[in-house]
Length: 348
Image (cartoon, rainbow, N blue to C red):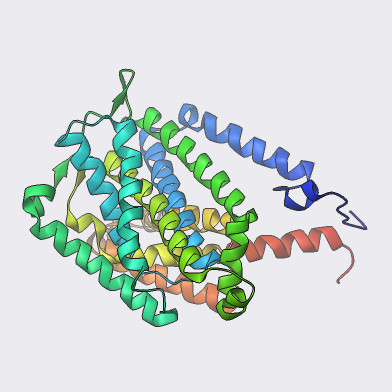
């Protein structure tokens, strides 16, 4: 137990962590993640890839909603832009995946300007409704721009190869997704510690006070939209590579609700919370399935018949429980455990 926590240099103030235990724990998780494909089957590996994609999307949304305080319900639209950009460039224009994948993020970032500019003077519920309208607009554009997006027929995505390695297969796809996740997480952590991140937090806490202190609200809000949408667009491109076929039904409104639920469950404003929330909510349907399969065949068939209804009800119950009992989310539970451990046997 430490009796004091003193920082004597600037480098200590801006360091990601000054604890050797934390870095050892991160190293252990990193090693386990690298060894996971050697220990798991194809089905479990697919679940992990889905969880990692959810982590990328959650980190992107957290930069906008958690760090900057701008509520967005348009994540399904940005995911669709990233996925369709990647699919169109690969299948219709013959771009290699190492160019089309980041292009999906760039396209989402550019499209976000169209949402960000009209939303500069909006906050709270009004901003959420505006971003929700954007998601509907994107869905209709994709549906009716058949010459570009193939409309309701969708697009098959294949041929994602680098140096002869098929990146849409289990192990290569996992390692690519894991590498992108690591880059996105560390980039987000460093952005939060930068001047830009501190400006975003000032806008979140009190935008008028931030403006008085010299923060350019227009510049930093648009930048938050673009950075968040770029990361979400990358997640959308990865979705198109994983499922191999995309159409408008893949990017339903429920994705935006799930994305917001992830950062609420994990803890708003926390990168670690976004990671925990994404993993928790991604694996929750699998836990529900295993729960029903543990009983008789009747329960299993009931789950198969009402899988989406059961999933929606479970999401709602979990969100209500967390908002009522632990508003800070999973990261709040971790902080309480850490405080209890460091102060034990004292109660304060």
